Image (tube, rainbow, N blue to C red; front, side, top):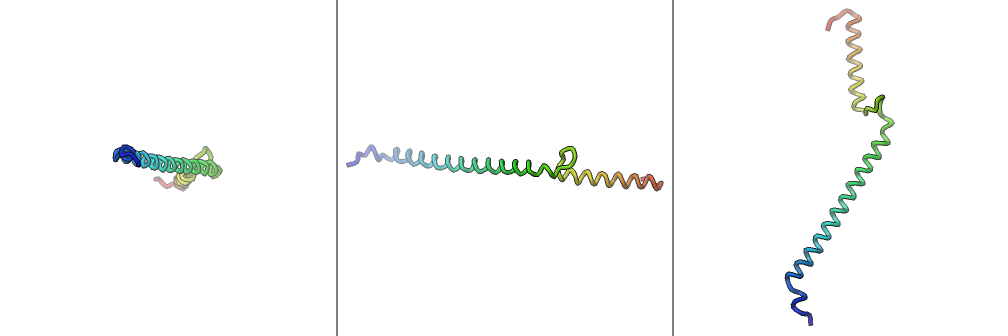
Length: 86
């Protein structure tokens, strides 16, 4: 027969906790690896899109701001050329 000490409740609880912690640790590790893979893909994608940058290495958003600034400068120069004060 099996001794009572082998199936003692404290031992069963300890073993169950150990298995539970192991499962949680593996799940967290798997999630961490997935997150790292996602970040690697984002970095790779950003490197591939560098061809869409404007002069000076600025991105698309900065290009829109630069274009708006140039349009504003052109309007000011046209106003100065026509003699209108701003």
